[in-house]
Image (cartoon, rainbow, N blue to C red; front, side, top):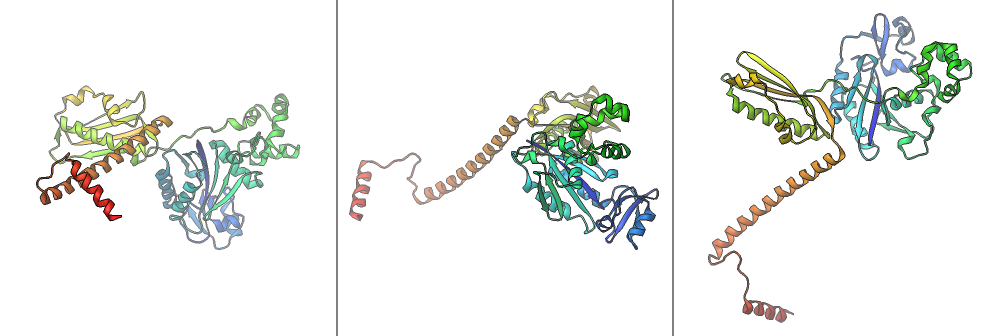
Length: 402
């Protein structure tokens, strides 16, 4: 089963140790935990934030902070399905497993905490889809979600959706409060609340023509509460999705370079297989005589087997005209999730490889023991068995021992 984890960050756009705010254009875009507890919220003027927290340090938003890079690196180490929005201080990731991955989330929170200060934290929500995960966190900020599981992963709070806990959650999301609906404009949200529309269920009961007559045609999308974000748009693949080789100043012949490509392909497939992934689109780059040869290959049936991918490799004509190659680079620009049967076969193959390795080690031990026996008893031969008289003597000695 797949799970969507949604996180909102506090203070990760800054680098301060004490209370601080991050501003852009005179407006607060992020605040530390101390400043947030004092009432500082993104969107308020910096002057108002300084009035709420005297002596608060003000930083300017300047690209990606060290803390945010650390967060992204930790997320990539756990799953390649990562979508981050630094400007909005939020992210989504996708995890897979037979049950709610609380142990993995706890370890992830520990890894994240190693790169954060006391003024920074991440608030998490786990649900089935990205939209539900974001709604769950927004809902929990308004009121306690009935049936949800609340946990503390160190200093990072986590809320788990009720429908992941095998509880009766029929029509659960329709009961979410209007105040948690981020897709509805604030002025329209305030008017709905004044009219007694407090839940998405109440909004769904209003006739569409009446709703549009009051708020305009844009009100049609407000009712599509569960049709928002159903899948992730993963960030650009990290360096871990690539494999490369660099030659010396003389380069290598083309046939030898192809073998280097084969080794890079095996390394890339092995790394992706650990995450349950396979190459969907492969980008290949070769550096030949003073030029770069680059092309892409779309894999019809993604597989973790490098032999199958190698059989589908199509070499451009200019590659065959190259004499020597100086560098090779492979990058999986698009990946696909392996089917459960592929993952099962892959695990069985790894188990057989481990068993074969153990058998080889045992065979080597037996050969070494045989050499020692032959040195002690030169007439000993493989396949020899005890004859009738020797077996009768062994039985007689056993009876005497009793």
